[in-house]
Image (cartoon, rainbow, N blue to C red; front, top):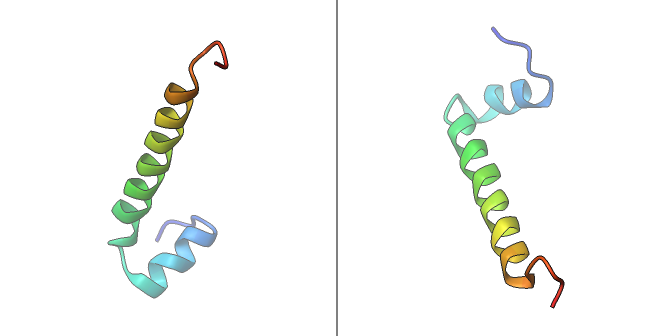
Amino acid sequence: MLQLGPIDGLIEVFGPFVIPVLLFAAGFVGYLVLVALGRTGPDGD
């Protein structure tokens, strides 16, 4: 079994399906950050 620190604990509790959920959450947050940056614009208008 892989030792992934806190993620390993999550896998023990929730099962392996937590990995794609974490990936989706990380991607969604990253998308929101990009959208927020895109709305402000590079010149800070």
